[in-house]
Length: 198
Image (tube, rainbow, N blue to C red; front, side, top):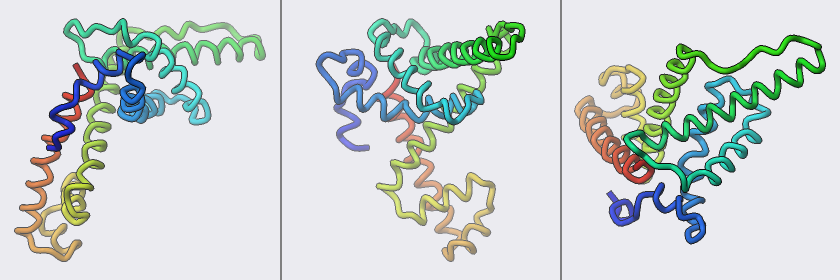
């Protein structure tokens, strides 16, 4: 693990002090921008509206980040709530515009407890995928393309024998590369989580 990861303060703590650390805000946005996009996409926000809505979310985060206190919950829970509320507000606004044009009846878009549980599950799944993909991207600087390909193919359920044949390497090499990448991936995910979560 690089010294940078060991010596930097928590990204969240740095980003909360926005007056003194523009770089922290830029790092924060770099970490979370794609996650916000994935959440909105998973919540079926129209693709054309995602960039503007993502900016709305980032502004809300920027305005309210100093007030965030962990108190036993993870930052991504708070972040996900900000995204969720922005998306609900978006749908309400779209529905109001539709009702004005179509003269339809307004339907409350407040989510039920069941919908909220489904959203929480979706958020958790998206977070896991996001963190693994982010860490895998970082591993491209550490491992050969072959090693990363071995690991990705194993994640897709291919057998070691199939991977060896496809990449023209030995089965033992597949096992070795897969285990090395997996071990480093776990370390990278943990380092990223320590960096971006409190």
